[in-house]
Amino acid sequence: MPQKLAVIGCGKMAYAILKGLNRQAFAAIYCNDINPARSALFEAEFGATACALCESIDAADMIILAVKPQQLAQVMEDSQGRWTADKLLISVLAGVKTESLEKATGGKTAIIRVMPNTPCLIGQGISALCAGKLTTPVQMLAAQDIFAQLGKVVTVEEKLMDAVTAVSGSGPAYVFSVVEAMINAAVNVGLDAALARELVLATCKGSLAMLEAENAHPAVLREQVCSPAGTTIAGVRQLEANGLRKAFFDAIEKAYQRSIELGKQ
Image (cartoon, rainbow, N blue to C red; front, side):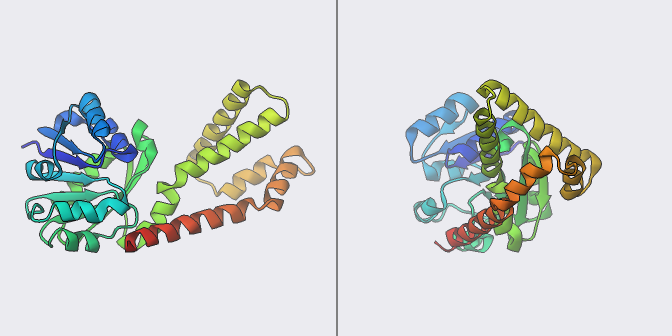
């Protein structure tokens, strides 16, 4: 029997998830957000039914919780007594552990924690899943089936989820920052913006395709491009001199620590 889905929190990640889902597979979709305009958007684009928080939980078999971590306490306070044993709660909240959600929901509802990323919007995302102590294999498979529609799916131990958040959850922003910097640098040396964008995007796409196709370490492929005393080694040397590697170490460490902090709030 098709399940009924509720989405609590209609932000960008929830939008990306619903955009990629086969929504016809659900008997009904409900949505709730503190901003009525966001609920209205989900009604218009996805055919969801906007309703009050408790009504959406009561009506659904499966609930995707996509509010900001800072809003979690209020959501749980407002929905006390609604989390029954026949429901599955899928949380995409950064940093919030399954144990915390099990406690907040009264210890009866199965919890699955997921860290997707925004390329889910075009079916090119990757989502990491971990199960709470009440989650059955059947429920885990159901969640995997949902997120497989949005890209790749991996299952991990929960102790790795903060690191996953820092790498793949936040990672698209790092990639976009690198691409933006390359385009700006290309304009600086005389290319027009449109050509710079085309060159940079094609270069990134082709380079990533090579990494997948050849299954080689990135350093090996980098060395293949770097001729002795050539242009590429001069550019790579400057990237290293300016701290490229350290910048990524620091960025991922900061994101990792922030994910841990969010789980303690």
